[in-house]
Image 1 (cartoon, rainbow, N blue to C red):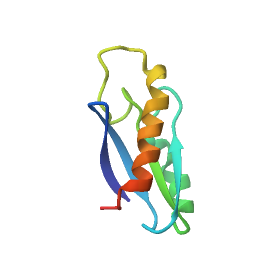
Image 2: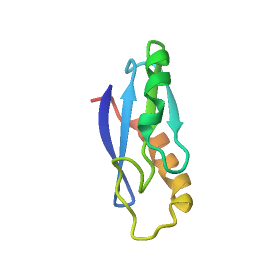
Image 3: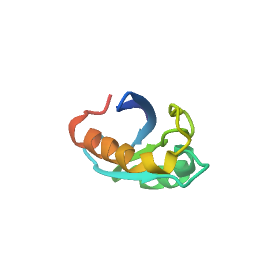
Image 4: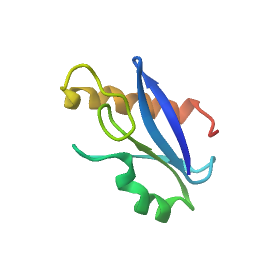
Length: 92
Protein backbone atom coordinates (compact mmCIF):
# COMPACT_ATOMS: atom_id res chain seq x y z
CA UNK A 1 0.00 0.00 0.00
CA UNK A 2 1.15 3.51 -0.85
CA UNK A 3 -0.34 6.58 0.86
CA UNK A 4 -0.62 9.69 -1.32
CA UNK A 5 -2.11 13.18 -1.14
CA UNK A 6 -4.21 14.56 -3.99
CA UNK A 7 -4.84 18.27 -4.57
CA UNK A 8 -8.49 19.06 -5.24
CA UNK A 9 -9.14 22.78 -5.63
CA UNK A 10 -6.62 23.66 -2.95
CA UNK A 11 -7.85 20.96 -0.57
CA UNK A 12 -5.61 18.02 0.27
CA UNK A 13 -7.32 14.64 -0.06
CA UNK A 14 -5.77 11.57 1.54
CA UNK A 15 -5.75 8.40 -0.55
CA UNK A 16 -4.09 5.01 -0.66
CA UNK A 17 -3.13 2.81 -3.59
CA UNK A 18 -3.06 -0.97 -3.22
CA UNK A 19 -1.95 -3.48 -5.83
CA UNK A 20 0.21 -3.59 -8.95
CA UNK A 21 0.98 -0.38 -10.88
CA UNK A 22 -0.25 -1.98 -14.10
CA UNK A 23 -3.48 -3.33 -12.60
CA UNK A 24 -6.84 -2.02 -13.74
CA UNK A 25 -7.70 0.89 -11.39
CA UNK A 26 -10.75 0.58 -9.15
CA UNK A 27 -11.81 3.46 -6.86
CA UNK A 28 -13.49 2.74 -3.53
CA UNK A 29 -15.24 5.61 -1.73
CA UNK A 30 -16.70 5.63 1.75
CA UNK A 31 -20.04 6.72 3.22
CA UNK A 32 -20.58 9.66 5.56
CA UNK A 33 -18.61 9.63 8.83
CA UNK A 34 -16.17 6.97 7.55
CA UNK A 35 -12.70 7.04 5.97
CA UNK A 36 -10.72 5.27 3.27
CA UNK A 37 -9.57 2.79 5.93
CA UNK A 38 -13.04 1.25 5.60
CA UNK A 39 -11.79 -0.56 2.50
CA UNK A 40 -8.52 -2.05 3.83
CA UNK A 41 -9.80 -5.62 4.09
CA UNK A 42 -11.43 -5.76 0.65
CA UNK A 43 -8.45 -3.93 -0.92
CA UNK A 44 -6.14 -6.62 0.46
CA UNK A 45 -8.31 -9.32 -1.14
CA UNK A 46 -8.38 -7.64 -4.56
CA UNK A 47 -4.92 -6.09 -4.77
CA UNK A 48 -3.35 -9.13 -6.44
CA UNK A 49 -5.24 -8.33 -9.66
CA UNK A 50 -6.42 -4.69 -9.44
CA UNK A 51 -4.90 -1.35 -8.55
CA UNK A 52 -7.23 -0.27 -5.74
CA UNK A 53 -7.54 3.44 -4.93
CA UNK A 54 -9.22 4.39 -1.64
CA UNK A 55 -10.07 8.02 -0.91
CA UNK A 56 -10.88 10.17 2.12
CA UNK A 57 -13.44 12.77 1.09
CA UNK A 58 -13.08 16.34 2.35
CA UNK A 59 -13.62 16.53 6.09
CA UNK A 60 -13.08 12.79 6.59
CA UNK A 61 -10.09 10.73 7.71
CA UNK A 62 -6.81 12.46 6.88
CA UNK A 63 -8.19 14.88 4.26
CA UNK A 64 -8.50 18.63 4.80
CA UNK A 65 -11.61 20.06 6.37
CA UNK A 66 -13.46 22.65 4.30
CA UNK A 67 -14.56 25.95 5.85
CA UNK A 68 -18.13 24.96 4.96
CA UNK A 69 -19.67 21.93 6.65
CA UNK A 70 -21.50 20.95 3.42
CA UNK A 71 -19.30 17.98 2.64
CA UNK A 72 -21.86 16.05 0.63
CA UNK A 73 -21.70 18.75 -2.05
CA UNK A 74 -17.94 18.18 -2.43
CA UNK A 75 -18.06 14.41 -3.01
CA UNK A 76 -18.51 14.57 -6.76
CA UNK A 77 -15.57 16.96 -7.48
CA UNK A 78 -13.37 14.90 -5.14
CA UNK A 79 -14.25 11.69 -6.99
CA UNK A 80 -13.52 13.30 -10.36
CA UNK A 81 -10.13 14.50 -9.09
CA UNK A 82 -9.26 10.97 -7.98
CA UNK A 83 -10.42 9.43 -11.26
CA UNK A 84 -8.26 11.89 -13.21
CA UNK A 85 -5.27 11.06 -11.00
CA UNK A 86 -5.71 7.35 -11.72
CA UNK A 87 -5.17 7.96 -15.41
CA UNK A 88 -2.32 10.48 -15.25
CA UNK A 89 -0.32 9.66 -12.11
CA UNK A 90 2.24 6.89 -12.00
CA UNK A 91 2.36 5.02 -8.75
CA UNK A 92 5.12 6.42 -6.48
